[in-house]
Image 1: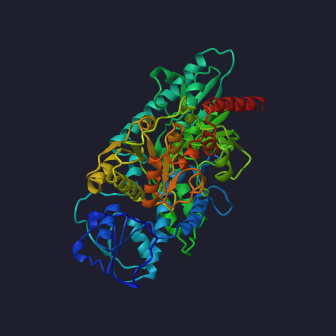
Image 2: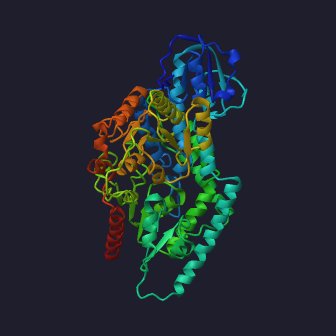
Image 3: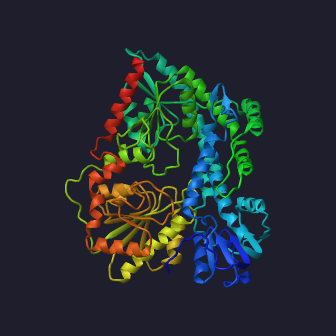
Length: 610
């Protein structure tokens, strides 16, 4: 049965009951009448169950037309830019003349977008007539929004244990960003080791005679900069400063790295933190009025205060440590991959205040007009002319030097041999985008259900194949094992999570994914690729459905694309053309890293002359 996603279009003027339930775990069939009730859920499993019963069901977080949500994306982004300013556009969060409110956005971004999404979606209920609304949820924000709209609820309890089929964003944030338990302990151990190393090594450096002084630069480590760090840190005339030891380096190579020691008593910063939090209450000025007329500013500031209150003391200690280190060890240049990441962003705050230039190499393709996660640097490598034109709107400080990672995909010596009789078809999993109002937490399972349904149909039509599901790094492998078992028990599927993408593509004949740079990686290897657009996010080229990339929007489209792959249709040829791909991803000549290295030296030379 094909599974559809639609904005809410009520079938009736009146409902007996409305059920808002997180998942199948809250379901109680005894109270439900498919002919008279409405169900709203986060969970693909519950939605699929109700739809199979002929009932009316929608996703809680996907009820509004995408064009309206896109308008609000711009409003939410504007609020995120301004929430920490007072009426005079002065940053409330300023320490030792360093404004740092911008660095706190990662702690609040998802929560602000989520509340805005719920405020827009649940406002739809104000226009419906019903007798009783039953609420079963661990998400307290739903109750907050319903209370705001003066909608009375009756609580229900969990009735069973069942796999959930939506992305547990709160759990993921707690696991990856707000470390606790064993992970928190290991993070603290790393901080101690980093601080010790960061303190000791400068004393050793001072004892080493040098014919020429070293130029220092800070680099934010992630995929686009890892090889760059390896190259630059071995130049004896450079001193490369990092937040932590690089990942994947040989142990002895760490001797070339310099780390910023984060230390000091947290108690020292508590009075300052209290003053800043009090100032936020007194001088906050930003507001967010959604397109439906709802002013949710107070609710957003309540979330902000709850999130940053326990964080502000350690943030101040980190900022103090960064200031202290850069006072003693000035740098000539900072290299970033995004305007996110706590310590790197605090380094950037200090550098901006002191006039130190920055070079930002974007972290993957940027295809959302409203976003600003990589727009604040002296110079920015946008990879390509398309990203420069669409995401950056042709601003002047853009260079197009390519993505260093794409050097792993040089021109092929010979055309790839594609098996079209029994192909290996790899599916790159979809994913929830927590900072786009048009995304919804079950999107990855809607995507997977459609793709596997299409592949199952092809198999039933005597088109044998091997199927691989490549789970994204922030996905949960067990969810996919449970999903395949529940909905496609007769499909033979290989699940892969941690293997490098290239090793998976090396055994692939056809690749299907969401809006992802991995589509380019597949095409560079001569593998036909399909973008299955189950998402409703508004995207720049080539993910806008109007470019060379083969795009399917429903199961019928996908089946046609699979038949076209089988018959070697020419529709796939354009996106296999490297000159076409270069418009979107930048140069594919294998020299992107060298271009970036040369540009860094050029920037350092300019600074030296200045």
